[in-house]
Image (cartoon, rainbow over all chains, first blue to last red; front, side, top):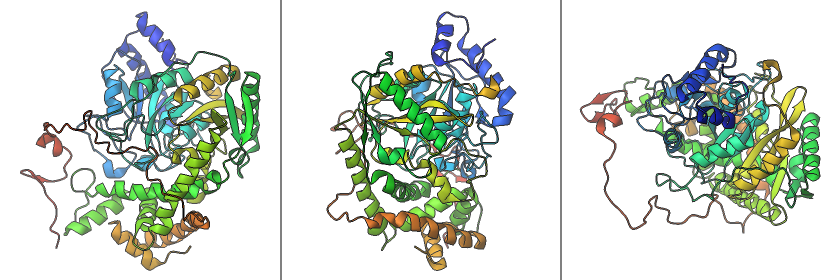
Length: 467
Length: 99
């Protein structure tokens, strides 16, 4: 009997190597677990029976094109859409022999912070099913924490990997922009989107990153990536860690979150790190506004392709334009519509310079502030999310309140920087995530630091109520 | 930063969205609130700050191993192209007339 609840990827690899279990038996075990326990959580939109591969089974966020397997991006406008090709990241998983367990739930077009915007119903947090798992990648994060997948791929534009990992209590990496191919990934904001690994621990996360990362001829925004080093040490000697004042003292951070993060920072000191305060004067204050201009603008362009002509939903009409307009109104949910409208407005004649143009300059500021901080520090730390998992429905009616969930994840995304979420404790019985941010291409430093901290913290990633 | 109903209708047209009356009313309110929040960016004097369109400084990345190479390769087979088509006629996507 395979205990999928606890099994890590490293342990699964051991089982496979010693032939104690076969790839298809392992795949079967996860499918059985999904069958038995996913009705309560709704992590998966669909599973894949008979997937091939001798490796460790994997969950893929439903924005990742999988050949022959329906891919909806959590939207009705792509209901029934079956890609005729694999995204590069899906192909790399396939080449590595990883059988796909299924496609996980997501906020529609990756727009959201709770997975409540999925057109197929929300996912529930395995720590407390009355609460959200975070978003947009709530399905993958919840699946990993609930033992319904040993690892998975998500996508992060403004925090959609890091924040769900924080709320579900596991490890998620948003990689340096350009290190993981976006080819075949349903586009939201092309200068921000990145695919990244989610797993129960840092080493498993690093392993998955090494499988998918690297230059891709099909995505001209990708770059060569330094060789990934699986982390081993327990010391942080010599590591300079910056604590940005504005990120750690921002309004809206729950006291329980601050407490857990402060404890983790203390631990870092005990492990030998050089911890000091630093400033990101305008990155936090203007980060959200900058993101919620640039991302919707790019989204308005990327979502223009959904017009009922070549694939996806089509609502019939007498004329072409009516057909397109009705298809889009029927197929898109509220959040994509909001962002398309916002983006279109920000890019329209007369408003472009004041909104989008200005936001691009704020982006430069944010990049410069982070670069300046990295002259004195190797890593920056902060809470990943200002709050622990909130209740379903709590923020759904107030878009701006929902956007605030991304306050701390957004600034580094604007600068294309990598960020790792490591669970650092509980508050009110719910996971708190620590965010580690590094300069571009510093994934190995993030893994090393994350691994050492993880061992010292000793967080049990299996939700209490499932043990 | 209030957005008017007329502006909402104009933007909806640009975005090819046929909004219902309820949506127009709701979005007018929501977008006004969001625009209010994001207009914050205009508080800053950034006249000598260059814009960033892209986090990496890549130039002339043509998506090929050898920038000089331009070898024709097979495209997507037509049956794949039409695999998800709502309406196909011969090798064309069939749509309603424009007028």
